[in-house]
Length: 143
Image 1 (cartoon, rainbow, N blue to C red):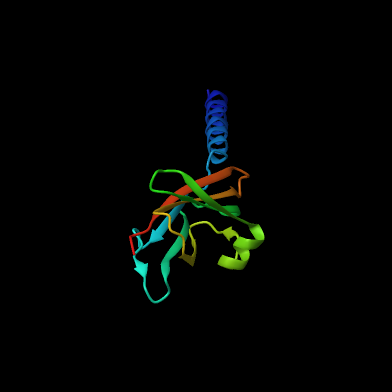
Image 2: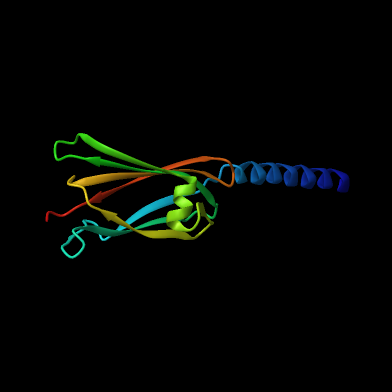
């Protein structure tokens, strides 16, 4: 009887370990984009719109940012420009392209275009080699 109990305990432990180890591989990073302020007021002194762009990881998994894209749209919802930044550009701008687990990367953005809003897309790869893509929207108040 004791041998049977030990076998059941071992079997249950193996099942629990298999479930736990299998679930661990499903975790992916969660990155949010914050634009502050938003909507963004026009700055008369600098003749443009200044805002603080923040990337925040909240699921405990670091992310290497590989690209940052700004798509400017017209009032008629037409794409009027695209600006692309890659790893070296992100490092130059934010000081790093690695977003550690439970942390943030932030930097100022200065916009001088005439478009009423911009869609910001950041792409990366988390520490589990999962692709990450997140978008945010910056809205510009009239001059």
